[in-house]
Length: 222
Length: 222
Image (cartoon, rainbow over all chains, first blue to last red; front, top):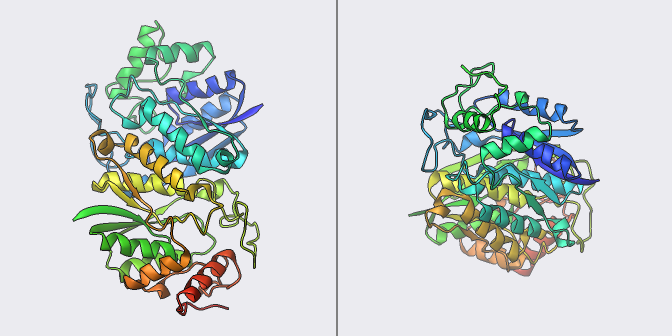
C-alpha cells in the first residue's frame, strides 16, 4: 500500500478527503495542528474522525501562529455573522496552508510518502489565495525540489480532490464513502462544548450543502 | 524604509545576511525558531546577534519538528566527525527550510513585507536539496500565489545573497559590514556553554573560511 499524508482539521472537508485517500488505495497518516485555534474542540473532532476511519498514525503538531496575529481564528478579531464574504475574509490565517503543507512535506519525507492530501476548495473559499489550483501546483513544484525524495526522482503529488467541488458535492461524495459527519465541526464560533452557531460563513455553507442533498446535518446547532 | 523578514539562526551565515539586508536599505524583522534543536545556545546567539545589529523586532517561533524525527540535529543520531559529507548528510532536517520560510511568509504578510532573506548556500551545502537556487525560485513562485499580497500584485522577493558564495567569501563580506562573529555559533556538537568541537562538518568549513581570509575565528574551540 502506498503511504500518504492527509491533513485533518476536524472539519467536514478534511474528513471527506481522508475517506477519499483510503478509497484511492492509500494508507493515510493523518496530521493535525494545534495552532492556538480558539476552538480546541476541533482537535477532538480530528481525533474522533481519525479513529472512526481506522487511522493508525495520527500526529498533532504544536505550532504557534499567534506570534504573528492577523486572523479572527487566532486572535481577538470578531467573527462576521450572517454574510458570505466576497473579499478575503478576516478568518484567513496568513500563509496557513503553506505552513501546514510544509509540515506535511516533512512528515512525508520521514515516512517515505510522495503523496499529500489537502481539503482545500476553490469554490466555497474563493477569497483564500492558498486554496486556488495554481497555488496547489506551485507548492507541488516547490515541494518536489525541497526534498531528498524529489532529488531522487519521486515527484511530490499534492492531491486536492475537493478543489472544484461545491459543498453539496463534497457531502454527497463523503456520504457515499461512509464518512460519519457527526464527528466533524465547521463553525467559526462554536460553544465550548462544540454546538455550532449556525450563522457564520462556515455554518451557512455547511447547512446549505446538506440541504441541497436533502440530508439533515447530524451535528447540533444553537 | 522597506520592511523585510530575515531568518536568523545564530550561525555565521544568517548573521551576515542580516547585515546585508540592512546594507541594502531594508528594516529587518528577525525570525528565529525554537525547534527542539539539541543546542539551545544557538538561540542565545541569535538574540545577541539581533541586539548587536540593532534589530527592534525579533520573534522566536516555537515549533516542534521532533514529532517527525529523522535528523541528527533533532534526534539521537550521532553527528559525523572529521569528514565533509558528499551525500545528503544525516544533519539534514526534513523540509526544514520550507517550514522556516513558510513562517517567514506569514510574518511577511502580517507586517506588510514582500521581501524575505535566507542564508542558504549552495556551495558548502550542496547535499541539501532546499539550499539550491531552483528551490529558492520555486518557493518564491509558490509564496507569491499563497498570499493576499501576492494576489494584490506584490510579488514575493526571496533573497538568498549567500547562495553562490564560498564560506571565505561570506566571512569577507560580513567582516566588511562589521558583523561581530563572536556572537555566532556554527558547531553541530558544541559543549553546553557553547564551545565548538572543531571537528564536525560545520566547524571544519567555518575554520577553513576564516583561515582563507587570514583571519582568526573569534569563537572558542575545544
